[in-house]
Image (cartoon, rainbow, N blue to C red; front, top):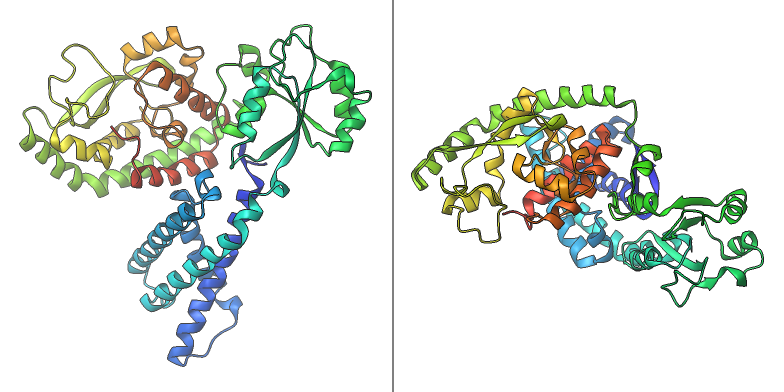
Length: 461
């Protein structure tokens, strides 16, 4: 994997993304040449129009990232990828048409945009027909050896067998017979020279998967492997990198303290984040105020009660604040106390089901962002009663409050709607990853991928 601004990107995804960007530039150039030839225009040198061509390709490329073209399902299913590519290119062309309306240009003619759309679809689908099997091959998978044959090793085996996995496990080494869960594991005593064994297998990384590490670390073996130039990783760090979440089943306070993350450079990132929040929330409120007003009126007409729902939530450093949303439930929905929303929840009104599905009920939260109580990106703020009980049941739950809560977040784009303690535990793993590895780049990725969640709202309730 390539680490970009503290966030890991698989080699296959990076290669495919860069290739797509080049193909989109070529498709834009071909569309321009085609239309210029039809009109009998003199075609200037490519250097005179590289900027609008690159801009066109970048807008479509960002739309592809936003709808999940580079997600795990898209990389292993050509049908899935093709559908997402069509949606992404359509959205990109619409965005370019809007840009041309706001800033008129001779380059973005409707005919040129149409040709660009057709050519982009053809080259990107052809690209995936040719490269899907190649990108999923072992050529782009790191060769990993696992020290240990415990339940952790079983988890690594299952993770490596996934089609979207970026690594292949070439050997399991059983360090002891007392904690062995894999029959295929090779006993450590059967290997005379572990360093030579690693070299012969072409291993690029070794993962330590011992169930009990106290007084059991094979320091001599690890030193020998390290001096061979092979990367050595512990189980929790490996899982964090491969899955984009902090594994609560194996982490401990010392790992959180000594592992990479929670950098001191966050002061600058926080300033950038706040400037963006102020600008974006002001723009969102200005553009959506008529929409908020219209649906506030419809909510009043649809059911008795106020148009807006106000509720105490837990914010930064555990401080409470009042969250404002368009009301989507009956006014007596929480007469017996706060409850998680259920599938086909009878408390949700007719209109409420629609505004929840398309996320219109979330729009008034931009006011909380403008006031500084929330951010656009961060862990979702919870009700104080939930927080109190979850902090007792889930380790490190209070650490999610070390960053400002958000309207969307890393957990929201990676995990469906949660309505149980176990769901909260799994979402916390993503929230901790975000808190630990936050950068403006990760915020940008999350904001882009939120488009996918809105277009395909599988987890909305």
